[in-house]
Amino acid sequence: MKYPWIDEYLQNKPGVTKDLQKDWNWIRYQIGGKMFAAVCLDKDNQPYYITLKLEPSEGDFLRAQYPDIVPGYYMNKVHWNSVKPDGELPDELLKDLLDKSWQLVLHGFSRKKQLEILGETSPANTSSGTLAAGAKKKSFDYKKEYKEFYLPKTKPSIVEIPPMNYIAVRGKGDPNAENSEYKSSIGLLYAIAFTIKMSRKTGHTIEGFFDYVVPPLEGFWWQEHTKGIDYSRKDTFQFISLIRLPDFVTKDDFDWAIQTASVKKNMDFSKVEFMTYNEGLCVQCMHIGSYDSEPDTVSQMHAYITAHGYALDITDERYHHEIYLSDARKVSPEKLKTVIRHPVKPR
Image (cartoon, rainbow, N blue to C red; front, side, top):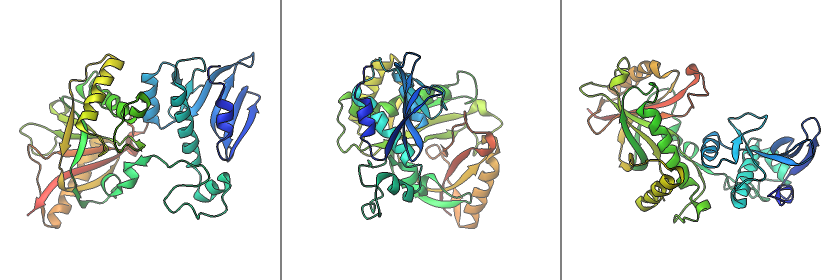
């Protein structure tokens, strides 16, 4: 195996136990009785996969970037990934992925259980929201840190959105159509988003960089000569697909990511742009259900602004805005969570 250090590296993590799952012939590494990594052995007891857990979007990206990372072997392929032990994955990247897997499983426990796993007797060192005794700080998650922007209630509310920078791709047409511009835009966005997120692994230094969860996919939508959105004419949709950029990412960093991804993936990223947008005063609401049922939520939002002294302000520069908190490929339509946001102005 190319990674002879792996056993010592994993056992040195706080709270880790190791055993052999005889039925599968897997060496399992666990915390609190839950597996976070495994070395899968063949009939000759030689490693043929190293299995670990990742955030689904990061796993999808890494599989596309590295042929030695494949969907989790005999595991849930949304959350688990397997690494070929004799491949070309750099040691430092594998260590980083193992660290993330350990953190994901650890943070799935209650705070009390985490302290027990790490051998802590009190939360004296946890006031900053991290755990002591070797637990690395959890990746910054924009959805959780800015709940007022990403996790509104299912009742309308008014919010002031500050200027933000985005990765953006423009297009038109029915987003559900096969080979649509919209589906293509998503692949372009995530390729650049994860190139920036993984920049440290390539030697590119971004000043002020901190580890973060890639923010959710968003979209601005409109139709020419149409007031609001007509969901029955999806073929006339125009859109800007977006992923928010951390504030530390500059235009120069963005240009580096475009160039790097173009070479590595041998793809054309000329449609991808660095976009600064000041959304301003808006009404927003959490919509739960299919995209086609959004008009019911939109009607509630518009009734709310009328009752509270505001007017709808959708223009050529202010759009119907959606933030997608669910993966439509993996969540049933009735359970989809989408933030709907419309620009408003005082009446």
